[in-house]
Image (cartoon, one colour):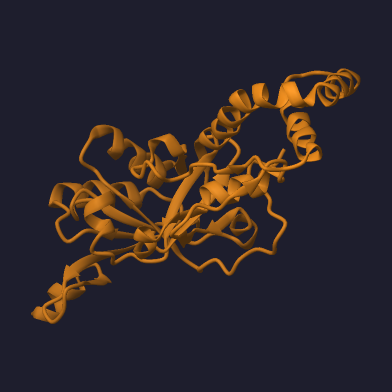
Length: 270
């Protein structure tokens, strides 16, 4: 069974390499990184763990006709284990008593729809590896690492670009689940546009097995300690296909970072 969501539109032009920032400040986070590098296991989280409380909130348009209510109610019934005959009977009863049932359904339906969003597996990536904001936000104030991923064409079909807006999209009740997912999980406030984010969506959280060549680069932060560098290098050395190692350096001319091959800056200074 497919683990990812599939969308009606054509696959987007996903960048050849996507990046993810990691901190190493706790044993738990360091273990995530070790399992990623050594075992090719990518941890997939859920929206309630995200840092933005405005992120991934579903906004449903309830000003719709009876057909939309019936369609959405049928989707909910499909998750109860009822037989087709039982669902048909319940839907017919709902249709007869719709004026009384709709207000009652509203109280339970919207939280259930939001719960499905909250239980979706989401992994976030960025187009950039030199962000002055993401290094401190997600990589322990430049003391962590940034990992580059080079996914296959097939894998990229489940990766979608985040769009930035001022207002939340309004999703009509009864819209396909993929539309609900896209509107809630692939839209964020314009304040986050600098992240240039892409998301891998799966039907459940947990660890996802990567292919040996998926990890293509490991970037040390400009403050990554020698001990952390040594530990990451040791993990990388046991990979079937070790990743290229780079490091971030503070630029002297402008406010920014240069990402250079490991040791390149030192060699240029000698």
